[in-house]
Amino acid sequence: MSKVSYYTAEGLKKLREELSYLKDVERPNASRAIGEARDKGDLSENAEYDAAKEAQGMLEMKISKLEETLANARLIDESQLDSSKVLVLSTVKIKNQTNGMEMTYTLVADGEADLASGKISVNSPIGRGLLGKRVGEVADIEVPNGILKFDILEISR
Image (cartoon, rainbow, N blue to C red; front, side, top):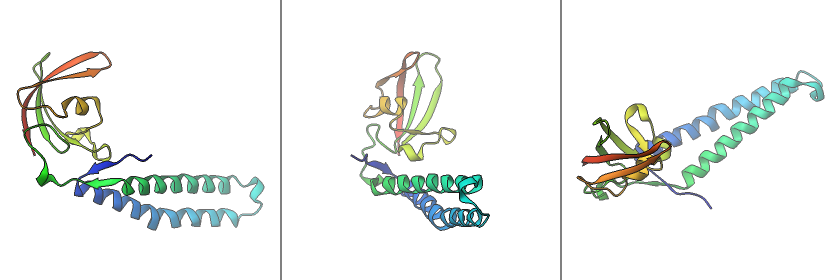
């Protein structure tokens, strides 16, 4: 059973571009490498040929996984999202009750998560803990060393 993932238009575009690159650039390169290694003689003792075949297998596996991801991807219509509670694509300002630190995160699909730019996966512990919360509520988030409590300060799109 395949897992449906939700993406923004930008996230889907990146996935399609990566798939196109793998098929149009990397796949021909892998075939060329195999051909060059094959031309070098006895295949039974040709480490270069074995490595090229293995690289091709890994590439095909990556292409297949990306095709499956795209087949199960759904585009999120941002105009239909409720901004009164935390959902996918919500930008949430939270405050850690323990140390008073404030953070702002945007909840995105797994494939779009990038902590450096403030995008966290809805399937991460913090993402799961924030889903469905409203401004003023407290999110109890279970992490390996206990439970963190975050105040929901602001929700935006």
